Length: 227
Image (tube, helix red, strand yellow):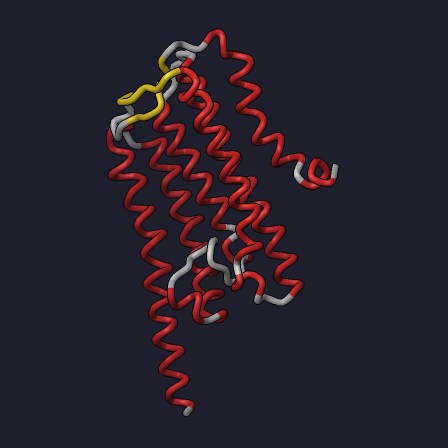
């Protein structure tokens, strides 16, 4: 009962794709599209069971991993008790967002298998864009840990660098997510991955990493000067 009370929304998100599969099972074809290339064309199919159930099952494992990871993270536990409680709430929100994304992908695969005519690649890119926008707004609330956030050697070495990097990184994620979203609706599908998604993704990874390194250099220089 405690699990149901605390995790009812998570359980609902995880159950929805399974319920959808059950409802449409008899209507699904023997082969379901499961992969799309950069041009938005289907380039791989899977059997009915694998195609419809693989993503929902992966989503369950993802939820379990994200829920259990903090218990084994020494750096997460090293934060003060108030920070641990606050960050636990943030991580729960992140878990809900990521599994919600997974559930949307699973439902999109089902819709494609049922021959609904829509651009699956564009749907996925738009979903990823929204994912970055939402997650970017939560980055500033994360505290040092080994499994979530911008984990470079320099952010993990200094709480100050962690906080500075996540303020900037979250802002960059939101801006790039907005850029991706515009690109998703403005560019042809065949150009989306290379021109509208990948460049922004590189910026999201590179900018916080480079910034954290220069923050580390500055902090080290100030420490040497003080001594």
